[in-house]
Length: 193
Image (cartoon, rainbow, N blue to C red; front, side, top):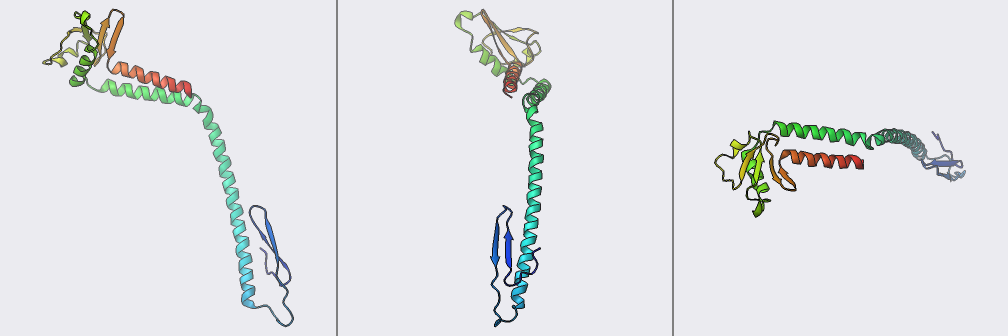
């Protein structure tokens, strides 16, 4: 605390950034007599308020510096995990959750028919005897729907999937293909982490 600043004595204001401002109050002339008590009370209150403000500002600055240091330390601990472990963990979690959801969902007859039509669109005229392969449990779901191509049961085809075998490969459509794409995307993200 600065205390009473008597006339003719310097008053120094200190700021948080280290600056100081000095001000000397003019000495009162003998003709003036004593200093006005109201003016003295204002000066004392200002000095006390200024000192309290400086103390609070210093405490806040120290608290901010400490919080910044803790944050920097926490970020340093997170950064190594972001290099691969975190993305790998997220990739495994997303793959597992989506696989569970897809595995628990029943095969939708309308969606299966749309997949059959989408794969059948790739059949060319010279492949007229080509068959679309479906899981034997899925074939009854197409009952009553018009399908222009022969449907062949194949237990190796996953439920909800459709496969077209061609001379130089195959075309497949269904949840397993989409899960494979998701896994490939997650693997790519893992590699970029």
